[in-house]
Image (cartoon, rainbow, N blue to C red; front, top):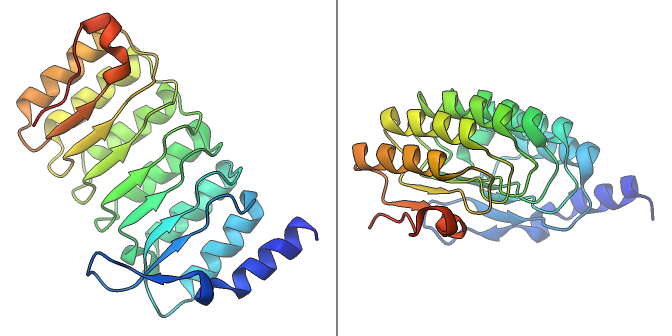
Length: 217
């Protein structure tokens, strides 16, 4: 069966694959990890979701070889009226890179309903983080952001730190397994101390350069 046929079959099974969301928010959870969606399949999926009457509260498209074009489709979904029902998006372990991060960042500037965004292991460097940091300065809805296992260096960590100082929604940020040094960690810790809303900043695998885990509780 070709990839196109597989995606078509998957889209025909969306109602079967959807399960009632357990958060009490109504709507459904859609877990589509390891479905080989790629960019084209993600585009078709997002178009289908924009046409659904029943809201998808949680969408998991992790591990699907989704590149920048697929991330643009996810961003379009978040900007749509139906997509504003999505509270949790897991797009981790894909290949969106800096371009994909920037398209999601643009959507976050206007989307106020997404609560959790997981884009760990998505090949994001400082350029993508720069766009996300700017979005965090104005976004009020996001509570959890997972940027672990990317390629964030000191410059990106400092940009995130500046955003955290003024962000009014985020409570949890995961930055494990990135490339910043003590300078980046110090900047992030200072930002957390200035923003009491942030209760968890995870960088534990960088304890070799600072000597402690930065987790606020």
